[in-house]
Length: 546
Image (cartoon, rainbow, N blue to C red; front, side, top):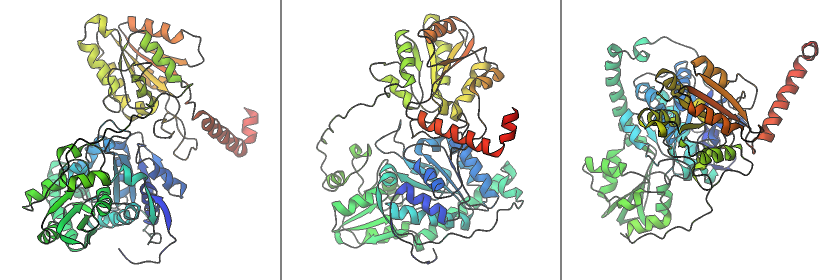
């Protein structure tokens, strides 16, 4: 990267550092779906003056980002690790295409499952989709590698994944920005059909070009990639990635350490030279043994961590245990206070009804997932975003009638927009013999990740008014036979009577249980008043006539 005047130092989280780097990189559009620990990236980018927007889901976010990159604009796409599963369809073909503008996809992994349903290791995507991957160890590297990712993306006309983890996302370290805003040319479209229309005739040569790109990037990574050696004794050499590199420096300050900033394609010759200077070589990595297995395949012998350390985040203490072969049982962490639905949350009344009616509840991802815990224990399945409707339909199709008529699918408003609409289409297209009941718990926000907007709120990421999806109108247009809206203030027993009626019918039904989130309600009222004030200022005479 080119040298430039140093800007003032700042104490930033990894998420904030990525947002600042995106601003300095001249990113023209940031897209994504909110998901911890990635959410703050686009919120910060918006606050800094960048153009950011929430998409209905990660697949759409990446597709919008691809379109912007095809138009010559630098684009940032953000999501948490499970979101990349949703975006995988366009990702695997996007690498075949030639981009005009840089595209960086941030995958925020969550080892230890602080707020996720699994702890998948998204480094596997780099190899599977043949996409370059960078992994910062702290906020400074989060800033630096974001800038570098755009340079790599534009040099080889390929998307680049920036993989971060919870600890890097949320920990704050000093960042010394070294860039002035990137002056990118005005976006414009130039036709390039063979590089962007992936029919077999064009995709076959595109695949060969992709492999040539990855080979060239590997050579570059060996020659000048973001890899750093910290000198130490030859008795112990450590190769580490991400936050594990920070832990390694504290746990073994006298060891030789190689940190790898680009983990796909690997700088194998750099690693080989480093290994030759060590009596013992240990690989430290959170999650799956991706790096140690890659070294083994390349004929570079190295120790990995025991299987027990595959689970959860690494810490300095855990790194010390790995280095000393200490496999005694780890101390059981003290139990904390279990999470619970907020007092006054409208979801509480819904789960009380579902519990008392002994429903079989196919649940979904959101703060309402806490309905599985006491005192409700009114959720029987939870797999991934949007799965509640499909899982509920599957149960309906196979269970005996007396059990099938107890099945209800419960999904939140943001989750419904994310990936529940296709489930509703499935219900209309392949209705079970007993019908089915879907409940949308509409609290007017994406509550679990910090009260972000979505297409069902009628407000943009910046909380300005925009188009709004009406769930009940959508359901009627799709052909759902019974559509009802229940408000939290409704007469006691209204929801229970309605559910009993719908569960007795062999028809398709949607119930929208609508009440703003108790935490978001004051903000929602503020946003609505601000919108009304702007409208009044813009056209007072028209409003008076109305």
